[in-house]
Length: 366
Ligand code: NAD
Ligand code: GLY
Image (cartoon, rainbow, N blue to C red; front, side, top):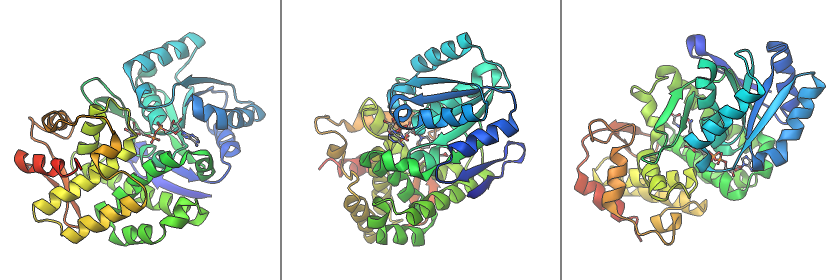
């Protein structure tokens, strides 16, 4: 088993990485939280594959549990499902010693994490991420959120989990498109500060997409260690942590424009390419960096153009830019961008000329 520490003073915790992890999770619960109930939040897809396996192990260890299920997809990151879930949990009975388990992808992690942070003014919460995206990114670092009509992740908290249990074998049942969406976040990490990792990803993508165990373990541990280092420096995203949002100011606006009917990771794929294009236009990155990144995303079958995110959307530049201005990273309407001085060299930049931004986005129309 691999164990990685997220070092955050009194909010520190461990991430455990192991195949067939449910028995271990149940044993840890029994040992660390004797007599406390496990409250499992999952979605209908994940329930089908993993809920019984988890609850059988809890029962074997005499742990009492309740499980709650939401519809799969981004729409569940809403006030509506938050209210529904909290009502159900409170009606069944919950106390501050109970532990909430988020069993699923980033949507479940963000929603269950937010709920845990406000229910009874905060109850313990553990992540069991089952998508590549949630295993490399969203389960680590304590960002929780739901969306509002105005924008993505605009209501949320920083609330660290007590532990994260990752079973890479769960990726076997994950649809290919979902795996690829998570892979966009993996590429993001390499663009931020690790050209060697990018080159390795580029060279080894065939084995990675065939879920070669060695590759999957390397990818998950590399990304988590990178995130752990950044979150340790800047847990509440005052500065350095913003680097992790490379491509996300674009991506969040695109997701909102499409009413969240697009995978987050697919929007991130176009978003990181837009960030690289903007960096190139401003003279920070070379054309070659842009083409190498574009080729890798393209050959990975990730979207690189707006029309690949939606065939029938009539994209309006003004509306995209308005959405970018409501992003959490903007300050008084001034958008803070993550740009790159080439692959592996991201940095934060304010005061981007709106015309240049428009021209950048326009290049992604066709
Ligand atoms: P998701 O949670 O919607 O999961 C994708 C799909 O895969 C869903 O249909 C789900 O039911 C299904 N699924 C999950 N695990 C499965 C498995 N093992 N086998 C079969 N099907 C499975 O999406 P996601 O890509 O995991 O997460 C995206 C969300 O994460 C977005 O809302 C994004 O904003 C958020 N996010 C949060 C952070 C953070 O730091 N908190 C970071 C990045 C992204
Ligand atoms: N996914 C960005 C962050 O956790 O900060």
